[in-house]
Image (cartoon, rainbow, N blue to C red; front, top):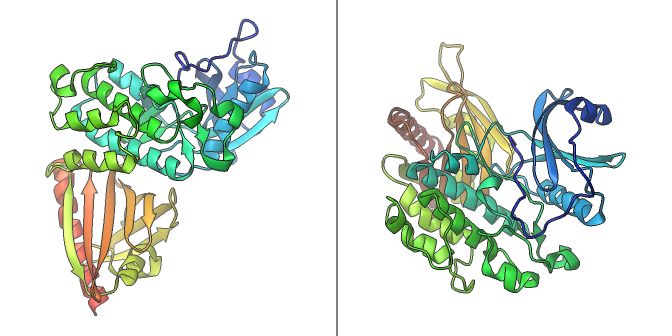
Length: 426
């Protein structure tokens, strides 16, 4: 990630035992011989974050460690809890952790370095447009739903903990206050009040021992309100459209997320996402195709997920071949597909990661253009429904900001889907 979240304002706070001077990059590198450490990105209430590099893997990383003046078991357990929480979560919209360890008295973990800005920085700069809200919010929601499905409640959703990369992809960071649900929970720690004032759900104060995933939904409502208005809502707040130029259709979504009684709030993050997507999927930003495929649903799903089958149809016309088709079919797994005009040596590569997989009904994945590395990332969702011995397919390609790129994809997907029908119907 590009910068550490600032821990100021958290209700779980720790007082340092003395003055704190962060180790220099050279000092830290001397303790971590397998890493290069290039610069300190910043530090907050508990953590210090550096930019570094794993030379053997040739990739940039972020290195987070406990501030050395926090010499108590509670802060160390919080730190390890964050590393372990992140290690279980492999998702395109959650920062990846690569390693965790201890060198001497130094606890650290190594994670994905994201070049970009925190959502807090963008809000402070007043550079969050309504189109940004429509793009960022569903990604935050997908990340949280995945965490919740994995049994983890973040408990500290706020703009500091959302990083936006250069392609407008969200990364949710800082699981230092995360709570495990069920048998993995830490009884002593999970009964304490935890969160950040202004973003904390009412039950995080009134009954911290019974906090569940709905607390994150409340905090997401606060973040949405702040993106739209530049303000954090108070107990009695005006609808976003009354405090800014926000689309009035946001008002009921925000109000539902910010219900103080969690039983009246959205019960799942996916419910809030569904309402947001009804706003974000505009004709300007979204392509939608429907096709009836002459094959059973399992065979159509296979056509999207088996490289040998993909290579037979995944190109806009018969004037192309598909020499590259690689699939790692798991959430967070990567894919690559390449389309090559016949008679040419150029291969147009498309790549991304899987966000959701419901076999054999649904695939959702990020979409990047290898030949246009500066283009904002988009997302594709393929939904399949049985229709007797046939399959009804809906393809939604969203988050376009460039109409030319959108129109080019419209032509490309039309050709691809026609070829899919032809190949599976042969």
